Length: 488
Ligand code: HEM
View (cartoon, rainbow, N blue to C red):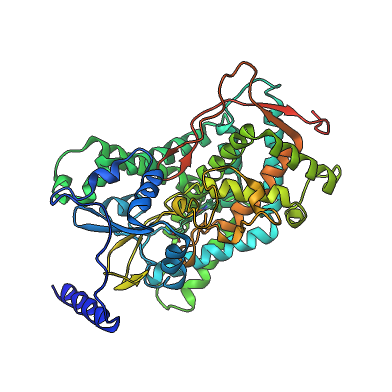
């Protein structure tokens, strides 16, 4: 009641100060009972929400149960909310099921904006930055060389590479987290992935999201929910086993950030806050965050890149020629990126067309605020439609075409206008890890292989994609033909 009265008052004050009534919020008409449920069950949400933006503009509202969501589909609106007014919109929706998958809200990606969350994110961020400066480059190089071997072992037979990309990306995170890497056939790795994929998949299902909007349903038996609980328990068991293992190692792997996290906790207890703010649970949940945030995203991105290159083989030739001219015979370092504009333009264009977290992660207004002149009451859920911003015709001519040239000199596009990692307080925590991975993996792959459509394959990969939390391409097969320099 009180909050409602306050936000009502604020809205009046706001209208008064602006000397004109706050514009009524655009958006599709909503059913009195079901709200805009139909709009929210589309099979490719990013495309659907972007289509709605054509009709209702770059800011519009959708209703679901008693939740109001505001979808932002332009760079300007997203930057206003996430960067300029970051402290108003740094929250996450608080949900019953989110709480369950996130160990009671003690993780970074789903945790709400609290003092505990800030301390947690800061400690993990520092550990990651240290690792980027010290060991990450070598860790990625090792995985890139390993990936080369895996591709050579196909002997030019057509293959779906998505799993190999996932193993490579996941090994980087497991090396960072526990100093361990796995083989594709490793049952331990398979178990971990199956479990995390199940959790992400189940959590996205409407059987589960209904529990958030309709609390009464929680009283009924729900087999999908029971499975989710089981998978969460299994995940925690696997991660705990690895962390315990790590603690027991005599000679700890120097690449692992777990060490610096545990150290940071010790320090934290005795300083700043007096009380215990961060515990082993936070190390545990940070590991889950990094595994979930860092595996499918990077591998989906690599899979998109190869697919786009099949559509425009001449781009692949240009990147290859640039690598040969600039680097002669050696492999690139991350510091070479400024001397490789063609490669960089390819990376930017794939990030633009297929931001692999197309709707970021929902934010929540933690106080009354405004975006683009519209009043936004506390607790409104904000959906940053990064896919929409990257297809805004006002910023990107021919937004749906794959044209890396737009990022080259005179092409008119600026990589600074991209926001694949979001921005502000909730900026992707793995941004610097991801950028180094995308660059090194792409450079190694394109130096060593030419990717071609398998002979007799009638059609090119379908570029529409399948969207859940991560935007992935449908399975396709490709031939990796070694380049002359590639030694077996
Ligand atoms: C959050 C994109 C790779 C860890 C996010 C968000 C986006 C994003 C859009 C949500 C930002 C928001 O809520 O506004 C990407 C892309 C990647 C990538 C495009 C690769 C191409 C990674 C990697 C890691 C990672 C490699 C880990 C090493 C995280 C975490 C969060 C996050 C922990 C939650 C941050 C928070 O809530 O404060 N990412 N990401 N991501 N990402 Fe990434």
